Length: 88
Image (cartoon, rainbow, N blue to C red; front, side, top):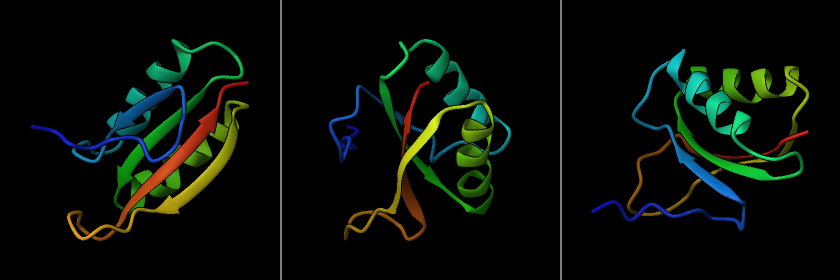
């Protein structure tokens, strides 16, 4: 059973920790495209490439990066981050 939950009150949540580039941003972009302007998406990601590419690509498309923080829990491996994007 997947107990991963959003850490914010974002409108949408996407866990891409099991994906590799370029699918990390493909999945993120598809989710953003389904959202209304002003809505937020929390993305759970892991690894150097997604951490660099997903926020940069979302920003290049004109969306706002609201926050990016490392997830710190005893149950999760190191290197997992939470990214919140606002669709513009």
